[in-house]
Length: 120
Image (cartoon, rainbow, N blue to C red; front, side, top):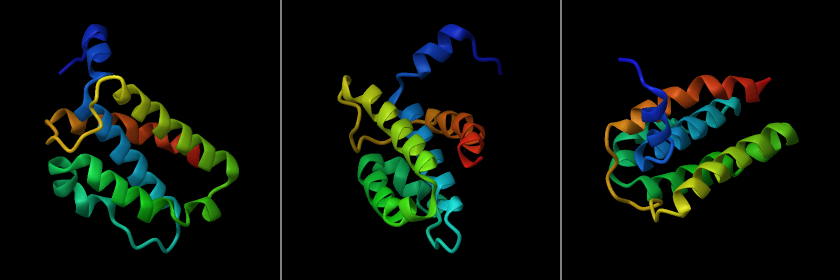
């Protein structure tokens, strides 16, 4: 399946796609913390049913001690990226607990490779 530029532009504002990106960011952030026992993937089903609430819970758990384990630059990059995604949702009242569609998977898998650059 090929995604055309116009279709990708539409996805960039799709709330499920954006929540998928947020999930990938949280998952990758959790893996950067050695000894972190939070497995973001175990919350995937709950995340699709209640994305806003689950995101808030995971972010609290993952980010609580992350600022001590990441460089300032890494922490800032992750925070800026999350803020950018949430700001995209803000104008459309999309940051809700409405169930996600399957496009969250596309956002998740498209964001994951981009997170590697932050770890360096």
